[in-house]
Length: 394
Image (cartoon, rainbow, N blue to C red):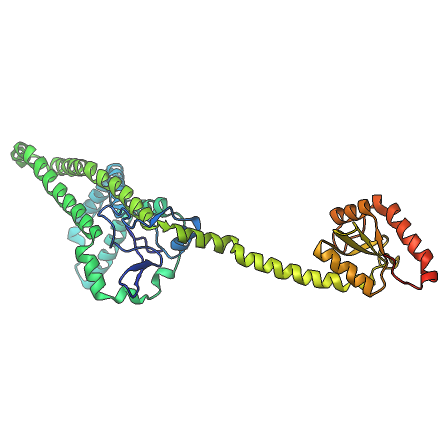
């Protein structure tokens, strides 16, 4: 199971000027006892990517006190329900053993067999309580952490072997002081409440001298439940505070600077500068390939100066004319220049050129509504080819 720190864990690298840069979580240095971020540059909430990355590393908020409170509450509940059957089973064991005590031969083999039988019976008696406590401990962790299994927390890190840094955090960090205060509160609670309960019950101790064994046991159980119940209320209050504090400190330690958020967005969406350069290179490559096909065209239709579209029609290649190249402004001039060099006819038709440029991509066939206009231009060119020997007409 992943390591679930109750505060903020991480690694700080010092630069040459003695400042610190966070490579993940910040350590306790630079934050108050409750974990509030004191770095004025870290004002932005952590992004989902940062949270997921830290989660995969095993760094998640988890309150240790919640598990204690839940286990104590669950243990009391299951004991309250199971104490009757447990006492009956224990009575049965004692009766069985004592009724046959005279027949028992205490040799090593019989003692060994009796020990195994007693262990099995005790396991059966205590199993419901132990399983309930184990389930509640798992549930308390699962509700806080969710589904998380990772082995990255077991990877060795050199930062963990920094003895001086570890001693400084252990002795002087705000989180250490907070944990000490919580431990002291537990000690005070567990010391004052039993003392107060016992003091309030002292007048009932002398009559217990005349009580039966079952009466004494029942009284002791009632006292135990009373002590646990009174101690449970402040323990639950401390657990609620610890849950809030651990999550608050975790969120504060995860905060990012504006530059870190921008860098992460660039990584996720792509750097606009890099994407622009890539798009420019891609357009250059496409433009070169497109211009290489202009000499294969049957005609270039122009706007006349702003747009140029090169068409080719070969019935064996496609059922309709195909756009080999198109361009506007500077690219249109290049297309026309190549067409002149290769004796490709150039025809001026403003509405047709605009329609082809807007509606047809390079490599696609022209739409059906433009068949008639393109067919008329191609027919006029083919009629003139024998006379002009394929010369270009501008």
